[in-house]
Image (cartoon, rainbow, N blue to C red; front, side, top):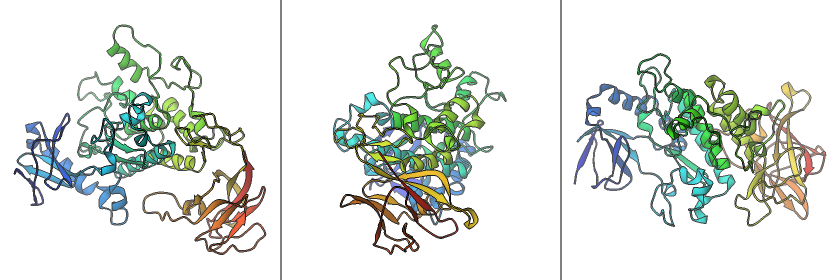
Length: 480
């Protein structure tokens, strides 16, 4: 039984033959199959002092999973290395992927769930029905992916090769795991090993890749290039198409040159608002504008505005790209606007409420046929007059309200209590809001609503959720 030795003195037995192989590493199960050992294929890697220093920095200084308060929660978002192997050759030990990241049935049973199987409508058709998930699951995994990248960026790390290959997904459960952590870029200390994966490489990296190594004008992967790959992934998972791959031909000389130009110096968003030369000829059935509010002061707070910022303003201007935190917050705001589709055969099951329009599912064309309550959030700065916040929550049966709905000073990040504080329900033909854990909920009539009690949701009524300094009031609208 071969044995690997780690820098901290541990030894671990592993099984042969190897179970997988990538461009840089060969992978083996440990005997208990709870971890894998990954050896670098290039033998010279073991002689590179920078490689060892990079691994130490990733394992210790920059490791978000070591946080005493949120580490366990964050560990679920990554496959973060747990040890550095020095013998029989240089490598890393990482946890085995959780079982939900392996296909449980169908022709791919036992294979890990690379994102490519779920980000393409064509490839999704090859999967068993019970593996495809619905739109809510994709939205939830995108939230977690944005959170994982946001946390990495806050510690100063860049992934450098963020792609559907390096993010495992579980749409059925709304989960994801960022992998290939051992080659993270540490700015000003450790340069990237690779330029990225085709389709996710930032245009400026592609456009300058032919410049000599060391040329100051050559752009290499960093945090700003992650901020191109991240919205590409989000766009693919939510809309099942690539944001830049359209019909426009930029070179007739060769397919390789056309790919270089179309993804690099001449990249163009297929939903560009004014330049429609890359728009698919068959049109776009579900455009980005079906994913949330557009225009106005809240344009950059929701997905349509952020996609335009990423793929129009920031496509060739990296400083204009939205941050991972902006994506995370916009995805949570989008979750507040979800409406369950009433068509039992709808493949996606959910769609987004659009203000001022007849509510219709873009996936199957089902139309909402009964009023739903919309809770408009309001706040009172410095205990002054309550004013609209420009954000709302769409009510449906069993729709929960969490702390970040009740208090505008709380955000749905790691470490936050996710206990349901109140919830919307349909009872005897009426919509009601039931208090579960709120101490100062006040009904429209001005009476306290004790825990376990409810008040009716009617057009124009106002309900105080909390009288804390940053507590919210909600104003009710009935929409259809």
